[in-house]
Image (tube, rainbow, N blue to C red; front, side, top):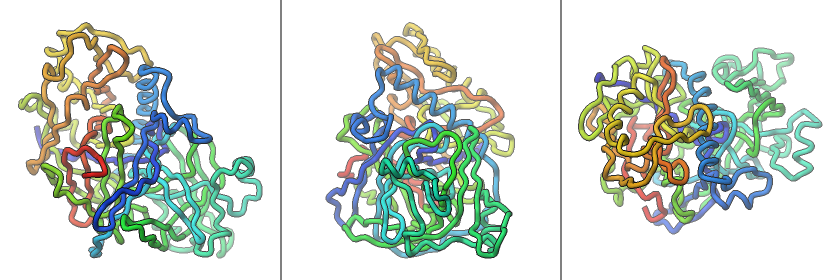
Length: 480
């Protein structure tokens, strides 16, 4: 199989039905001023204690997988809609920094842009907001009250978090007549209308499910806490003040843009924290004392057994992150996957997406992978999950099941690195007494999506300066 480009859509966000992890700030005992924030899965009992959310433990394991599939469906629509090649238009500059910062993250729901929440503070004086951390988005925006006198009055009455730029002495609107509004932000849905020279740059975001968000762009200061406890300011972060929202938008304050773009928070934070960010996901069925995290800065990999690196292609298809993959093997045998299915120019390609749970494969890839599993799973009674459309097609009774009976799956990168996920990441617990292959077919042409379950139990580090993706098996604990 020819080498191909795989797109890494790190969607840590809440704009997607795929939101699976909530997080709370957790300061761990780290040397070198490091700090960790834990991520809480959307189905964690901890979320049942949070006011105003409908998340928490599902009524059954079958309901759990049904929610994840529903989220994935919306997510896949969003990815397919947004996968548009763009030219690279900026470079990350080298800034020396040994500091590390991590942000609290939580899970999202309902629209199709990501999976995790993140907690950070905006403005002067700073106010705390719970945002979707989404590598598929380039703009950081939150629910806001700027000129609209009645916007979000009902939410303010219930003490929900609404940003008021007029109370922040560091908020500066971006003028609508500026070149930034007319040119740079055109990719971010800025509007051409400019009634007066003093009018702020307005935007109109449209999402694949019909949801739209209207507001104005501005710059403000973000406050983050280093692992050594020191608070620092990240000035001139571009944010969106969203006054009008139509459609699905629940339980979150806004979106943190982590996509690769000169205006995204990921690139802005990279300028201060070593030009790197990383995340680590434990098994979503693990005990609650095992946590997930997102970190800006260089992670100490000395305790990781085998940190592998592969080339990371930036700016080829903004805001996504691309790597070169050469094939997929089952028990050491490379699958005969058609090269066009991995070629973006032919309407294919792969996305490694933390915002999707299951792994969605276009039919030419899905058929090859499933064929390789036919013999081992034929030993078990085939069952139906019956949770609706887009459910896993191959489910079976777990009577007599052992992981040792399943073949080893590996993803091979062109420069020699290879991902070897544990069996439990592709043969998943779907319901009581039922196992399923964690793959779902999706239409061709279109992208394949490697979901977060397949990424579990690994640390993933994105080096924006040197164009490298590092990954290694990890327990994702604070002792790493």
